[in-house]
Amino acid sequence: MAKTDKQIIITISREYGSGGKEIGEKLAQRLGINFYDKKLIEEAAKAEGIPKNAFNTIESGNLLPFASGYTPETDDVEHYRQAQVIIALAAKEESFVIVGRCADSELKGMKDSLNIFIYAPLEERIKRVQKYLGADANENQIRREIARVDTIRRRFHNRYSYTKWGMREGYDILIDSSILGIDGTVDLLEKMVKEHFEIEG
Image (cartoon, rainbow, N blue to C red; front, top):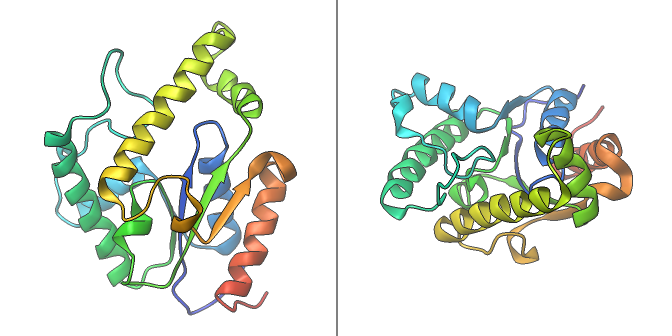
């Protein structure tokens, strides 16, 4: 586990089924810093005095059936409140890995962060999502779910970010998680993070 007095902020955007959340969690553990996803951002919001009901299901992979996943009137409120939490965490000089939430754009120009996008070939993502949805889900259902969730993430990101979701201009590192696998990707990212932030150990 790395030890440093420096503030480390790593943002992770990811394709659905690429293993981005798992990679983020393991990377945070390796570095000995906090990890935030939607659920943990909600908990952090409580500490910042932001009501839990400020958050809805947008940009998650678990939207209710028939939900569009894109309602600007409610998205604007949620995004603003999530942005408040992210900025507050960074301002307190807390080190963390955060998945999603347009954190790369929220911290742009404010903090030295490393912005990562994790992707994988569709066939690899289908195998991973199969585990999420269970054995009863057929391949066509899985393909539709991948397309649905990626569309939600792309729309949310593109609405509130300076750059386009998944395009190289918006990230410091883009990595195919299928090449080295989850743990191998974590190994590589850990090395890159340590070199970027000049961390020993």
